[in-house]
Image 1: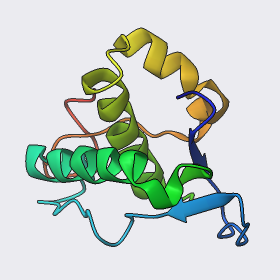
Image 2: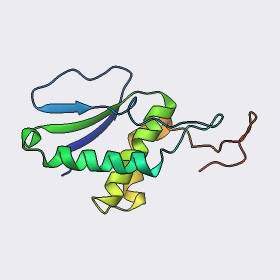
Image 3: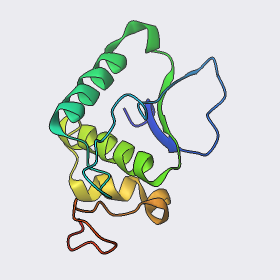
Image 4: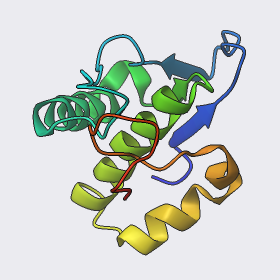
Length: 127
């Protein structure tokens, strides 16, 4: 499946291509913050994403195209999109969290750590 499924974060939306299908969940699966927190998305959103991605991968209409999960470069959108794809890779593809993190190596510098919902400028917990 490594030649079928891709993940990209870019400031510009991808251009249509006959051999690719681009999908985006930035505005569909949204984290509801309490304060300055921005994720990760809840288990219901995670489950919805994994089910939809499994459906896309098994859909005959997309059997000859590459699937691209595209997300914006906004810090909250790209880290939550990474989380979703990572959850899919762990749950469905049975990859280790370490292997998943390594797959996102080109984006590590763009990711901001999740933070708790505490008030104030400093965060007492980061994951």
